[in-house]
Image 1: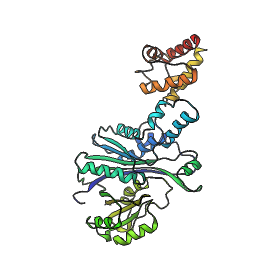
Image 2 (image 1 turned 45 degrees about the horizontal axis):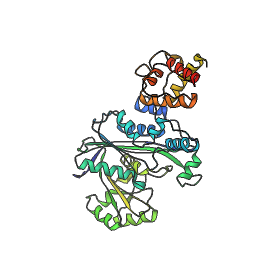
Image 3 (image 1 turned 180 degrees about the vertical axis):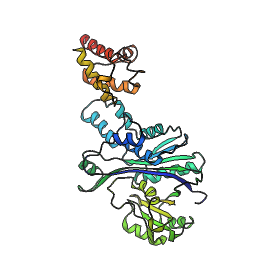
Image 4 (image 1 turned 90 degrees about the horizontal axis):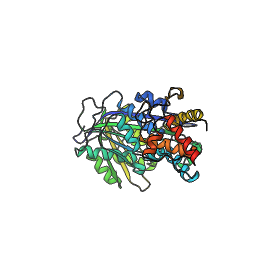
Length: 297
Length: 87
């Protein structure tokens, strides 16, 4: 762990492939959080489930900040409100309207854990999780935040055929919904699962390679991980350039959802990953930018 | 409009709109809707008011009207019956 690293105190996920109708999550929310949560849809329910699985029985410092991202936001409630407004021609239900604000999920997570730190929902396009994590790291390294929950949520909507169309997927493509969370601390916790070395954004492979060279992680002990939006050819070129022989594939067998990057850290820390002590995850966006996440055991 | 039937409808409406796990038979029709055993807040009141406007075409304004209507389930039923008969 280098001086700039941030400790990963815990990681937790919800992941479920959706084959037909998205499942009712009410019972699971109650089981995982220990209490029923009313007036929320599946997006917020997924957020609560993922965050509760991450934190487990631990008590978060009350000043813990919440950083959340989602490519699509709460599609379910947004569709409901849009249909009420424009198809049915009447005012949406107040509670539905309120929950169209994606930051509503931050509120429920903060309320569940009795947090009063800052909370922030960020977009980030193809780099949603990377952007949320980057913001958290910036504020932690600046000393503004000492403890943070960083998460992402993506839900599937019914009917699934329309959901696939919306995501530009093939009619038979496997789709999933997920909620991935990390609990980070600025201090060097002795019981930390690992650490986050950094999140960086590049427009050239040369700059990326130069940055990687300065990180103090050996190419032999670092696994390369290909993000969901990075093309195979580009991934191979980057891997060659950086001399990374080990690879860590956390995406195999998963259905499609947008914030797959959020699954990386937790999957890496729970895997053997070919004996690698660090993982370098590289994702891309349609403009050719590269987003890099570095995590260590 | 039959008040007893309306009270039962309103119990179900409150359960549905406020996402509560009550059984209708457990709901005291004379108990205060706000700051009482139902644990409802202003957002619930707004949700209920909008549902009542849609279903019964009765508008519940804020202030004294709102306080009167939300005094209890029974009072809410009276308010709806009164408003519809004077419309």
